[in-house]
Length: 150
Image (cartoon, rainbow, N blue to C red; front, side, top):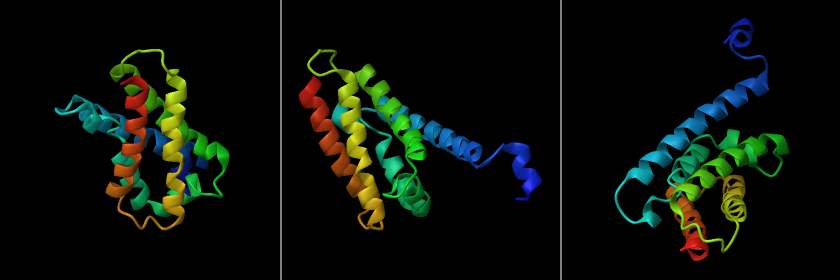
C-alpha cells in the first residue's frame, strides 16, 4: 500500500491499530453472542470469546508479542484490556446471579487478570495449542465466577 493510500484511510499508525482492534472486538462480541445463545450448561457457554482470542494470538504471534508481551507499550495493551473487560462485564451482567457477594468489577478484573497471563504463553512461542490454553483459562475463570456468583 502506498503512502497516499494509507493516509486516505488512516491518519497515523495508531488510527490503523485502533481500526484493527475495533474489527477484532466485533469478531469477539459476535463469537460471544453465538456461544451464549447456544444450548448446554452455562459453564460450557461462558467466556465464548476466549478461544477466538487465543487462536488469533497464535496466528498473529509477532503482533501479539508487540501488543501484550513483556516489552509492550502499556497504552497499547490498555486497549486490549478494555476490550476484554467490556466483554466480561457484559457477559456477567447478563448471566450471573446478582448476589452482592463480590463486586462485579472485582470479578471482571480477576478474569481479565487471568487473561493477562497469556503473554507468558506468547513469549514462550505459543507452544501449547490455543484449545489447551483456552481450557485452562476457562477452568480457572469460570470456577472463580461460579464460586462467587453460583
